[in-house]
Image 1 (cartoon, rainbow, N blue to C red):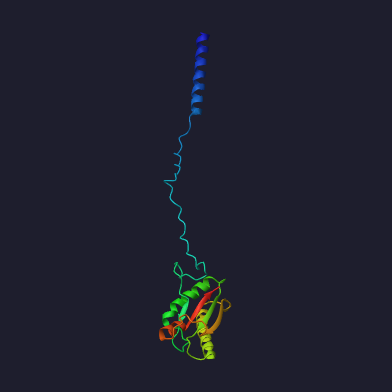
Image 2 (cartoon, rainbow, N blue to C red):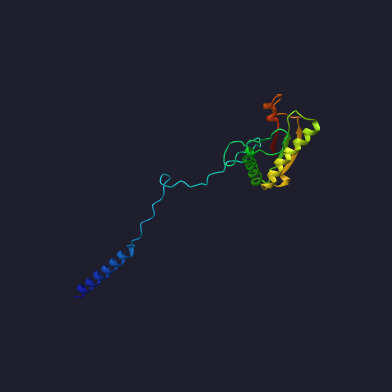
Length: 177
């Protein structure tokens, strides 16, 4: 009888050990792992759009936000130092560029046509350069960024001797440094 009782005890202990081992090897159910993103399914990183440069390789300014070179010539009527309304927007853009690029400087050259005396044309060219300079400083450009010079009639844009040529020679030109 002892044999039977011992056998039953051994079988019960074996069953307990077996059940205990089986339960310890079972794992608790967990959440499904996050799927790994592949190159095909991963969204492309959103980079901010890059700003176009402010100047070309020669130092000429671009119209802000574009790759179009900004016109640097401001034209005047005969015997006048008054900036024409048609040129105000261009000057506003030059001012914006200079305010945004405080490390840049500009030389404003004043020019005239061939009519008038040398002294008169030098003074008129200076007045044209000064008119552009005043506009830029009123728009926030530092005076330390601006230099003016008058060439009078010495450097014509057009060497002709008629009104079409003279109108192209009555100008102020912005040269960036």
